[in-house]
Image (cartoon, rainbow, N blue to C red):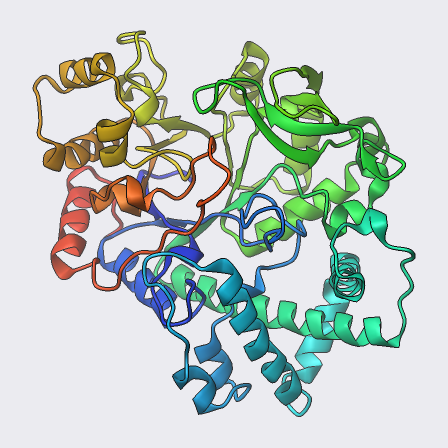
Length: 489
């Protein structure tokens, strides 16, 4: 990330299409074409790991740190590969065009994948599939067995399983899951190659934690703070901008002392996996790798916890020793202390700036104001956790923040012009990289918000309507990118 550039933030699941959820099919390639024509250099997505699906459908609450979300597999590409019949992609149930109906989509796509599994038995790709299984055995065996045992016992709460016996029925189900993972990664890498062919880099995302009900915790209990298979502590953050009682995420906490003794083996495997899948990797909740908020397992909110030391510089020295050219973005939002800032400076890490955080009472001094940006940062109008610009101004911004905003702009602007004004602030800033949520570029309201961290239900559903990315919109973005010296020509 050495040159001045820009990109768009939009998750795969938010793409349009007939099958109820965005996926790696034609709409994804069409979006890559849009990025190319609008002179963008980056496509940032959210984690593509499989969501828990029981506790939540959040991509940050995943069943595995290594596996892929098979709901993102494209039926149309499966048909082209001879793994589905024509009727499978023409007789499609009616799905919402504006939001993901997770349970309905999961049930429907699972049936399609079962059909693809049967057809694959005579497919010429079998040798490549076997090679994929060998290359990924270090995580694939655990994950596929975990999914198979989850179905056998009817729950992903592995602590309640009577035993972990891998019988023939479990082996067959695990074999099927391995195939789904092969199809997932084959489709994903094809899409990534297409983007890279245009010079567009993919920014992926590593959630710092995994779900308690995950293959990783089940298979690697030693690296988590557990007692009798139960969580001694839970993850979260203290009260902040998003919540007065803090955020209780509820993930198990890492046992960093033990992990260090293994030379960070599991974490290094995780980093290497993500560097294979993405050109740039964003590490979510970076401050948790310096110090993390540890909440007693019985607590119902995150208010009463304590800060505990993470691996900090030790882990990153090892990462850069093995991967000296790794492009990393560290998410340093929320309660940031001097030790976090010092490590970012010492390692010259690329951190984040969010413009919607800039208009508080610290006039002129906020690190989120464009005139305070350093070059080595990624500037956003907002992230997946923020409201849109329009939604923020209408529903969240206090009169004082609106006053500060207009003072910074030098004039009042209408709600219809506000998004373009703020986008121009970011694009014209010193930040080497600017990433715009697609919702902000399209001036969409709060209804298109991806996630509200203070609310448990209704998140991650948003999908873009077909036809919004017009030639006019494409030209506007291309022109702005050229004006501020961020495009490739």
